[in-house]
Amino acid sequence: MPIPLITTLVLVFFTVAFSLQNDQTVSIKFFKWTFEGSLVLVLLTTLCLGMVIHILASMPARIRKAKELAELNKRVLELEGTQPSDVSPPRIHQYPD
Image (cartoon, rainbow, N blue to C red; front, side):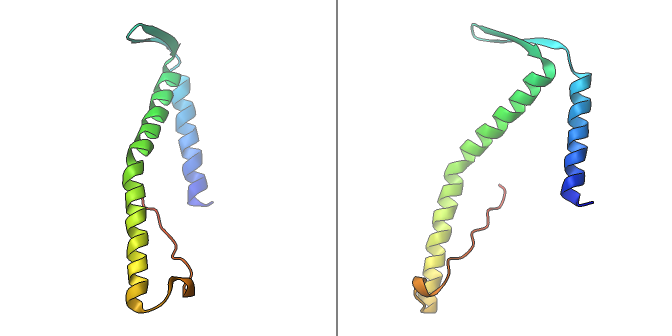
C-alpha cells in the first residue's frame, strides 16, 4: 500500500474515533451571539478556520517570494547570455512555510 493511502486511512480512523467520543453539545458565546452545537463540529470548524487564516496570512510572503524567484531566474538567464525565449520557463517549487 502506498504511504499516502495509509496516512489518509489512519487520519480518517482517528477523526471518526474522535467524533464518536466527543458528541456532547456545547454552547459558544461571542459578544451577543450564542451558538449551540456538537463539540466535534465546533472543534473541526475552528481547525478549518485556523487553516484558512494561516493560508491567507501567508499569501503576501508567498507572492513576494514568487516574484523574487522570477526576477532571480531572469537575472540568471541574462548572466548566462541566453534569451528568455530560448529557454523554457523554470518550474516553480512551492515549499511549505
